[in-house]
Amino acid sequence: MTSLDEQIQQRRSNLDELLKLGVDIYPHRFERRQTISELVGAYGARTHDELEADHVATVTSGRILAIRSFGKANFLVVSDGLARIQVYIRQDSLPELDFKIFKLLDFGDWVGVEGRLFRTKTNELTIWASHLHFLAKCLLPLPEKWHGLTDVEIRYRQRYLDLIVNPESRGVFEARSRIISAMREFMTARGYLEVETPMMQPIAGGALARPFTTHHNTLEMDLYLRIAPELYLKRLTVGGLEKVFEINRNFRNEGISTQHNPEFTMMEFYEAYADYQALMTMTEEMIGTVARKAVGTDGIAFGDHQIALTAPFARLSLREAARDAASRRLHRDVSDADLRARDRAAALAGGLAVEVDPGDGAGTITMHIFEALCEEHLIQPTFVYDFPTEVSPLSKQKPGDPDTVERFELYIGGFEIANAFSELNDPIEQRRRFEAQRRNRGRGNLEAHEMDDDYIHALEYGLPPTAGEGVGIDRLVMLLTNSPSIRDVILFPLMRKRD
Image (cartoon, rainbow, N blue to C red; front, side, top):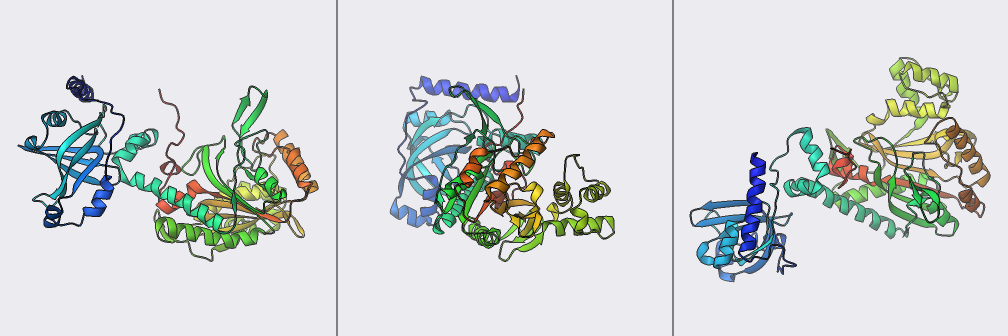
């Protein structure tokens, strides 16, 4: 029998002994007066004499994180996940049953404690227990330390253990909650209406991505988990809701990396009568405001970098970025025209060792070059704007330039945080773009956009000039909590099945 097996056997034996004592081993409730955090916050600065004079009585509860015995003096360390407090256990201060309960406790058990606050000779804030209540048994030994990749996997697979052992992880998810709240406050303060749109859709639209599929038995129809809420939110703008936003879960049947999870959270919003330039200004304000509210500063550390989230952010056109990076790499001048002609762009990509598919046009190749050469170097907040039309089927063209649309992506820390554009509101042009995407699907591009006749029908009722944006919440949380992987900021990331 292994040491782990022996520990598990001992814990089960202790639970059996508690049952023999008549203890309710799974009580229905426990009435506490204060949380441990409240006790520490209210009395953590009180002196020994002040506590003795006030005779502060309390009833609290938490998980046991340590058990120590020194002759007649016994101590528990109990935590509510935020703060810890010591509990002093003496046999002559407890009812006989309560002391027997203490002798059968294990590291990780849940207990309720009644008693008064005092300070020990080492000046530690402590509860002198007068009653001890058993609340739940921890039947499996808790890990004490994390080492290496195997344990990182355990943190993701068994997040509850991570939260018990690593206070830093809890801090990340508390920050995540504050970030989402701050984003919601920012939007509603500007007159945006929060809405909800379908997560199961008959057409996977609003982005270029591979969807997850499902089937509705009663309706006898295939459905897709949404890859983006875009086309539904713009339908609402057609209906007269001039400012709408949704904090939504999206699903994309694609690869997994430190920046990608198949299920992720995004805030997407649309504003009538605005364009992509207006959203740049709004986004600068949003990112800085959310950072200050959620983490207390707009000057953050991310990896080895210090990043300033203060406006104005840098601005860089996509073709300019790709052209300059290619020129530096190839040690020769690359022109804008080189990136607009398919054969010349493909030759450039070949010289740069950038992979190109046969069906890729000049715009897609330019995008590949930008992603390969530029993205990871955009550490300070940078708006990359004016994208090729070919990779932006829902964006409005720039006047006089049919190969370019009014679109930007915001990069911080070396990866994309937000994507926005002036919305294409010409139904005839939108149909033409969808037809081009459909031809791409026919050539094997499974990420190409499908035809959505109902959306075009909505556009025919008139979409006013509108700008829209999606902000990746998971990636923003990564930045603001200095987390290197998206799995660090998602409570239950998708993991490969293990035997």
